Amino acid sequence: MALVGKKAPSFKAAAVVNGEEIVENFSLDQFIGKKYVLFFFYPKDFTFVCPTELWAFQEHLEEFKARNVEVVAASTDTEQSHWGWLQLEKNKGGIQGITYPIVADTNKTISYNYGVLNGDFEWNEAGHLTATAELIAYRGLFLIDKNGVVQHELINNLPLGRNVKEALRMVDALQYFEEKGEVCPANWEKGKEGMSASHSGVADYLSKH
Image 1 (tube, rainbow, N blue to C red):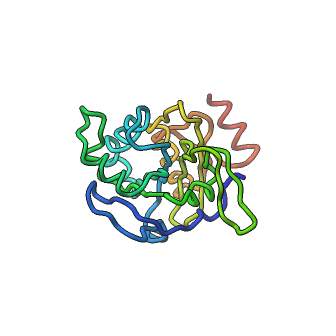
Image 2 (cartoon, rainbow, N blue to C red; image 1 turned 90 degrees about the vertical axis):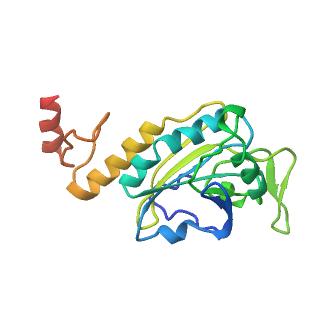
């Protein structure tokens, strides 16, 4: 079920912050009313496509910060696994130097509540999650506004890495709409004009393009 237009599921979980500090009871709720959040899931530590994505977000981190966006990652690994990967140098496949928080969804409930949990599982009569294979997260990405509402989501299958510049474009589009009250047409980019959400607005925009 899509989360767009709904409150982002709340959680408290351990996370590694600033590449070294393990924080218990980390929550996205701390940003409500203050910051936008780009919350993304990746499948697994110590893998192949995943570090390319984590580094791509780190390389654009200042651009997100300039837009008042907090970047937060999560996978179903433990906080100890996250910490260990963060101590491994980049040229050895590690993510040493990543500074944004990485959440440990060890009980899989965060991934489940965000609709990105991959694997064969079910809930038993006692309400416990049972699985017949390893449970990991798809590459889910959620743009959450300052009210805690999901405004954009994207879910990729495991082999398909994401485009970080597209994530920035979606932040720009959301903030443009909030500021100007105009909607953003296909392929809109920061610096381009939007259009009014009306028949005349659409006709006027199309006549110019």
